[in-house]
Amino acid sequence: MGIALRNTETWKLLEKHYLEIKDIHLRSLFENDRSRGRNLVIKDIGVYFDYSKNRITGKTIDLLIRLARERGLESRRDEMFAGEKINVTEERAVLHTALRVPVGSVVMSDGRNVVPDVLTVLEKMSAFSEKIRNGEWKGHTGKPIKNIVNIGIGGSDLGPVMAYEALKNYSMRSLVFRFVSNVDSSDFYEAVEDLSPEETLFIISSKTFTTLETMTNAHTARKWSLSKLGDPSAVARHFVAVSTNEKEVIKFGIDPLNMFGFWDWVGGRYSMSSAIGLSTMIAVGPETYYRMLNGLHQMDEHFRTAPLDKNIPVIMGLLGIWYNNFFGTQTQAVFPYDKYLHRFPAYLQQLTMESNGKNVTLDGDKTDYQTGAIYWGEPGTNGQHSFYQLLHQGTKLIPADFIGFMKPLNNLPPHQDYLIANLIAQGEALAFGKTEEEVKAEGVSNALTPHKVFEGNRPSSTFLLDKLSPENLGKLIAMYEHSVFVQAVIWDINPFDQMGVELGKVLAKNIIPELQDTAMTLSHDGSTNELINYYRKNRLND
Ligand code: F6P
Image (spheres, rainbow, N blue to C red):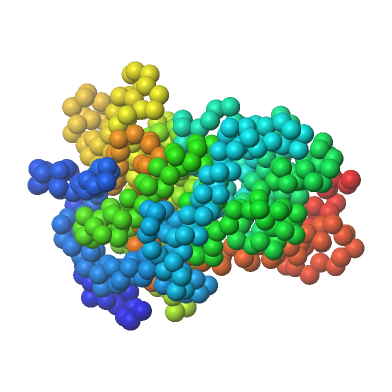
């Protein structure tokens, strides 16, 4: 990239503009513009995105969009969709968007249309899912499969578990789904404790098929299965693999016929619409799964074609830059007002933080500005009775995303109105607060008044959708995926590698034999040596 971000004229203008705006209260922004709540809204593809309660003016958006243009957002976006190798550190294309294109589309990567391969895998997944769902696929002893256990971690777990939970209302309730990710033996133990191996299918989900946690759990699962089923040929009826690494899948003992492939141009945290979604498809059926893909594609198309100032992921991404780099905020909260989305914040943590937690530019220069925010959240209204206190009256500025649905999936009046009233009220309270005069007017004593004042001026965005349909889930996922990309382009970082996870993995591999063989000499730092020694002395000796 040419000129360094902070040296660009637009960045300097934004710094100046920040000084103009930082003390302006949302109260006055709304008082001075009666149509703000209507104007600072984008309505497209069934998403109502209200960003009016952000500390911005028209000038802020103009400048941020100018910055996006200068940083080449449109051309970078087009390069991504065109299959160019924009993951420069790994020399890979980034084509998760090709996983959800309609039949007949053409998406080229390395001179080859990848869509037929995508469709072939989807067809194989559909056929397999149907066989499990209708009981045609029998276990080794002739019993149908009742339990599906997905073993994977990171993107090979968080997408599947989030989507299963989000779409539970559409799932086949006679099937049991479990998700094992942690190398902690209790994770596996609890997942299978009440299951019978005869009726249990394991999906070993791993892009690389070498991940320590997943392979350890997969071997334990095989032992657990065979301890009851005896015959190693049972693996063929009880284990399938989702991976890009056929060699390792075969080595593990899974027939490639029972393998569902994907490609190196699908990043782990962008993989939930690849074969990594197999457990989701079994749970909800191919038709419902295709509806989710359709929603993802609708948002891809919106991102690809909508003008920047009417583009939801673009505005979201730019607001993130505005708070992170000018207001100096550290975190971004996400509050889905829907129980089914309870794993969505955890899913977003990998998506956003593994993508944009970087401190060097594409050219390898150290950034002299902040990058990825810390994402966190919980479903409303639980958070309101827990940590929202800090949002309202604490000393930190935390931009928040509120996500809600007009129609409940389970209608038990008056729950829905109470839920949405709370969502709307929180954005209102954060933005406008309660002044000293208002508190005093209620007859509150002077001593208590400061405790009851809400400063307000705390920013939030609100997303309203019709209901938590498979399409709308897809839209929400792609919306965050693309907002991450927008930010990465501005920051000139690579959101598609994850080299920061490597060091810990390597060090753990070194420490494993040192824990097991107490005769090994330790040559770590003083603290690490002592921790290993303490564990050696106090571990369970079996
Ligand atoms: O360690 C991080 C990571 O590589 C993630 O990016 C990925 O989603 C996860 O591990 C799991 O990797 P795999 O699917 O190859 O097992």
